Length: 207
Figure 1 (tube, one colour):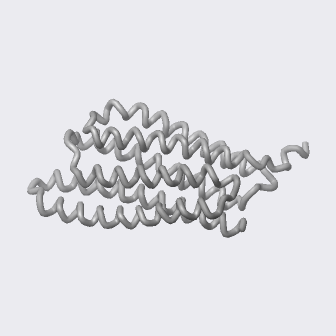
Figure 2 (cartoon, rainbow, N blue to C red):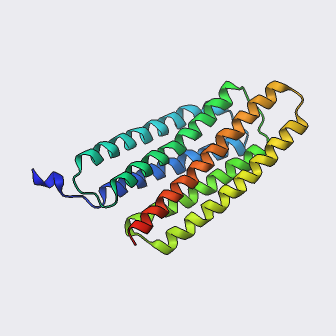
Figure 3 (cartoon, helix red, strand yellow):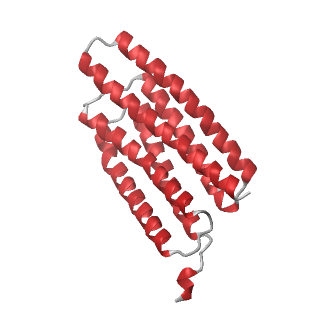
């Protein structure tokens, strides 16, 4: 009976690490799709499967959170971290589905640039999350700083991309489609930064 009240120190970190593995896998596949101008329909089922796995991990983590009396880190931080991480893979799924809905057959260079920034953010996040259970403050802070810098680069790229879109495209429907696509990736990059901020907050509380 009392065993359920004893925190399993690795349990929530296991959830974080499994989720960031799924997120990196999805992001890598998405970037290849964009870089190689592949048909998004081929990737859609795979991304949906990864997203469903991520949702299940998030659900299990939150259920465990409600059942655990003592947690290795603040329970609100656990909830925020798992939820925001899940949002990243949701953003990737939204991007793939939007490519299909909009019938986009040729990628724009700015979109590939944003997809590359997103991948680099997730790569840094993956490294940070893998070190979180050991609270490696210096290394994790370095990864979070890189994510902050990448998010700034993403903002600049987004603004330039929007400017070029309105300057170069005459078809209003094309403008609407690509504006939506840029916004999805920009929002997902912002989510990576928010996860990094949550991780930094956890470090401060456990220093």
